Image 1 (cartoon, rainbow, N blue to C red):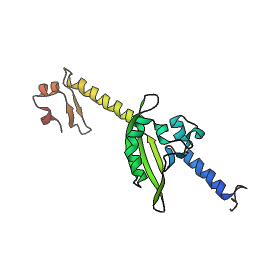
Image 2: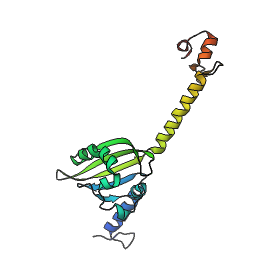
Image 3: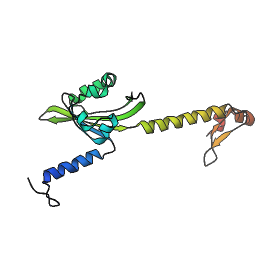
Image 4: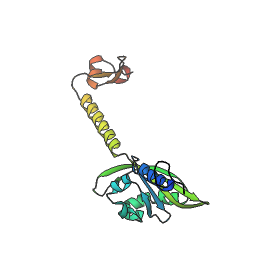
Amino acid sequence: MTADRRSDVPADAHEARLLRQLVDNIPAIVSYWDRDLRNVIANRAFVDYFGLTPAEMAGRHLRDLLGEELYELNRADLEAVLRGEQREFERAFQDRDGRTRYMQTAFVPEVVDGEVVGFYGFGSDLTARVEAEQARDDAVRLLRVTMDNAPIGQAIADMSLRAQYVNPAFCEMAGYSADELVG
């Protein structure tokens, strides 16, 4: 073991501490699971996401963490990663509070001497982005319904003044179909 030049801490311990700080500060959930689907390590974001302490996570079976329904939803991907296949997917699920969450997940197998000994799990919570996209889509639908049913002719044009949308009242007023006016 060599001494770290910056301190009295041995290099291996210093590197382990730096690695742990790096993993804990990644803005994603990161974990490692053994072949029996028991947790070996989880970063701070992971334990916070599931509302547990690191001590409560250590050795916990993935089924106990996810619950039966979510575990079954992930079963095919878990079986695949244990066969050595990397898996990436997005999934909607209900969290413990009943809220719908959206997660992008990757399972990456760790293969030693040709045998899968465990896997890394990486996840990003997409909930805020998905909810923002849904709100945007709802607003666009509301605008379209409002304009489609407006008794006054209305049009939306781009910066070149080409019509991108015309409502039925505008078509009636202009004497042309929407297909003839848009574009």
